[in-house]
Length: 371
Image 1 (cartoon, one colour):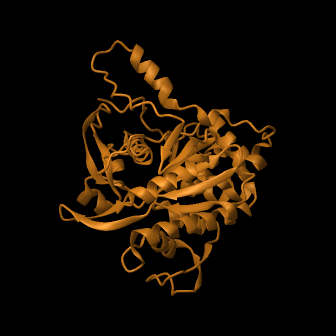
Image 2 (tube, helix red, strand yellow):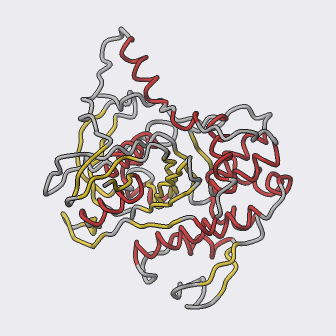
Image 3 (cartoon, helix red, strand yellow):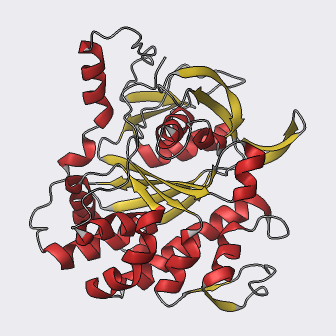
């Protein structure tokens, strides 16, 4: 079966429009920064519309596939229809219909990893949940070693070869690469995880409704280049990191120390602390970019980063995101990390999420409690 309604990933086209490409880069650096850039560059944010953000590109592709008479096109079974209202632990919740998700992925393209792991993996994984009505944004980090359900994809035709369980960062590698189905497979895996459709020891009698169909990805090799291009990103270390600094020290992240800050796990608090550092880095970077003029953003970031960025956001979606996020106070963005504990499975160290705490976290973000 093929991944339902997904198209092959492409990098932004039309090389003559640098202003549009810099929006893609800004989204991947941090979505909040884009609002400022779009407003300055275009001056077209005159209304509060956000309709394009709720247009799931998969729906159009599903319709096209269903009408295609070519043999071999098979759609997977639809999940059970989700209700807008659910009950859990004696409480009733109603879905917040105003939230749209953007999946951020930081891809590790280290050559050694490519050989050993049979493909690149997503070492940074965040979901930016944006409330289009209140302009509130929440960053949800999922530890890269979280053990969950995913697909193995035939990179030649996009069909699902099998379904199994692995670390969540492996979903990207099982899609065949950036120009194949890696981003689509990562989105499918994250959506299953957020909707609680993955395999659970104690099955729930409901699933959540948390669609994930928009993404922005950046090669992790681009992170130090981003930090260096803006003159460095200043952070205060909550613990010592070799090659970066000691606990309590305020450091300027540029070049190699920026890469160490966002990538180091061993001896620096493990996967959960790294996820929190990545959130902190992205927010500090956004503040730095927000203080830059549009001309400086293009001059300093465009040439270095265009080859590192991938996204499926349309121009309209970028503009609609910008309309909302230019109103968002960066300091008000809530940072959440899915709670996990370590475990060894088949000789591999993985993270097992706390099901009850994770479900409550997702209900708090995507649903409202009703009396």
